[in-house]
Length: 302
Ligand SMILES: NC(=O)c1ccc[n+]([C@@H]2O[C@H](COP(=O)([O-])OP(=O)(O)OC[C@H]3O[C@@H](n4cnc5c(N)ncnc54)[C@H](OP(=O)(O)O)[C@@H]3O)[C@@H](O)[C@H]2O)c1
Image 1 (cartoon, rainbow, N blue to C red):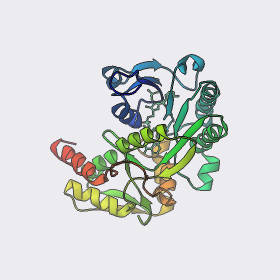
Image 2 (cartoon, protein in one colour):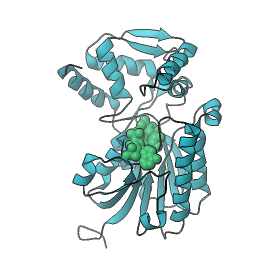
Image 3 (cartoon, protein in one colour):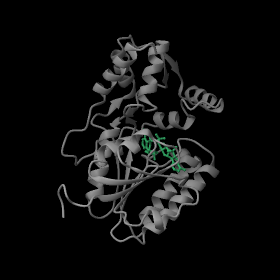
Image 4 (cartoon, rainbow, N blue to C red):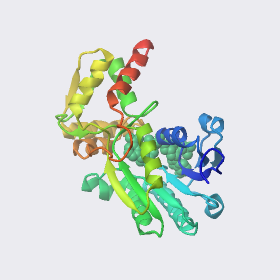
């Protein structure tokens, strides 16, 4: 049975507390019943009728119970930075979830991962080694799956472009890592949520790397951000080695502004994958978002 009177299908959302989780709520809450497992309360979830189960996915979760009756799992949980111990616990928890999921009839699993990174990061950084371990465990499972590996995401409250705009506005200059000749393909978090809906409905299994509609030269994107703010572009130029060293210092001081691995990844020119193909509407360009955020900043005292 389909249509307005049909019983809603049940989505288990893992780690929905952040940017992608909020976009998934907007995309799915009208026609899916959502059970959301993560640690901290999110205002919008209760208002959207979501069943929030406070849980650390790396801890003791009764997965058989949580997965009962579930049609679709969307897993977005990951830490942006941390020790091997922290990632080990989360990867082990997700492994237990996968094994329980294999017992659920007709379950589809859509998992958010990340694009390829330089070998030194793939093999040496807990963020990536454990992420790949989870990717491989899903690919080896009996489940039908999509592993989606988007590039840089943007959306209201994101921790990349929004933060960069704020710093440009406040200081009038911005660090330029290396030449700025490498690329990024920003993708709207709302587009990612629509892509997840499409992937959830596809048969079989696949893994794909993609970005937004335009592959930007990084320096051009920074220039465009300054233009959105109505400011001339001004850069503090740093060599690649100095860029990584500065980011490492910032991270070692305990800041979450930027991490050394993020700068290495950017400089490696692997963050400009081609656009996702298959949505029934065009992917959103980043420019209206930049203009909107810049207007908001110019209207505030930031
Ligand atoms: N943002 C990007 O540009 C980007 C690009 C490519 C891929 N991705 C991937 O997309 C996914 C989501 O990214 P995002 O930007 O939405 O991240 P985010 O804003 O940091 O949100 C991730 C959420 O995961 C939850 N989480 C983390 N550890 C958890 C744990 N142990 N147990 C339960 N929940 C946990 C957290 O919610 P609680 O604190 O409530 O637990 C957090 O709000 C990640 O897998 C990330 O690697 C992001």
